[in-house]
Amino acid sequence: MPDPDILITVGKITGTHGVRGLLKVHSYSGNLESLLSARTVILKAPGGDTRAFDVKSAAPHAGKLILGLNDFDDINQVMPLVGSEICMPRSQLPVPGEDEYYWCDLMGLEVATPDGKVLGSIVDIFETGSNDVYVVRGREREYLIPAIASVISSIDLEGGRMLVTPLEGLLDL
Image (cartoon, rainbow, N blue to C red; front, side):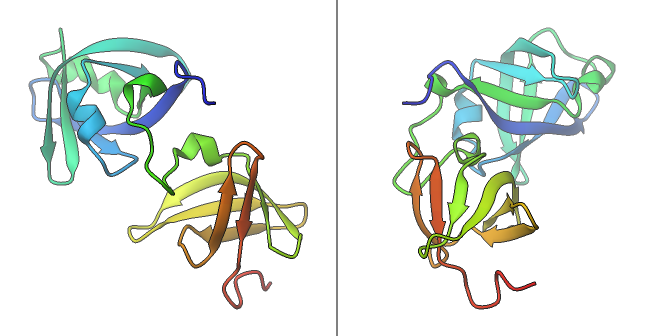
């Protein structure tokens, strides 16, 4: 069972919006609902320091989120926050649906094929627009595994393993 107090990274501050201290936020999930309802967010600076902020306002805008924080009303005050990741305690986030996972839960999973060949472990995940891609690092090389139903056979979080059925050519050098 995942720790309900663990911080989950849900987005990143990508810039400012206007001159009144508003921030542009890119949501990692594509689902803005959690961020829109948050009363407090925890910002993690690129150096790793974390700090909690009360949310003044949150509104969707052009596929992103515009976030206002209490006590910030000028662009110069929020500029140092650009590049920070937005985190929330797991307990404040919705429980993932069937076949949905938080990225942090997938990181480090061992990835193998149904015939038992271990490819490596998930070391990174990135979005492509149509689907996520898992970066799997093995002893000899890296694999880019598309997160699509025809490739991902099963995910066992408790067992720490993902089984993949590679598309033809996916594992070729």
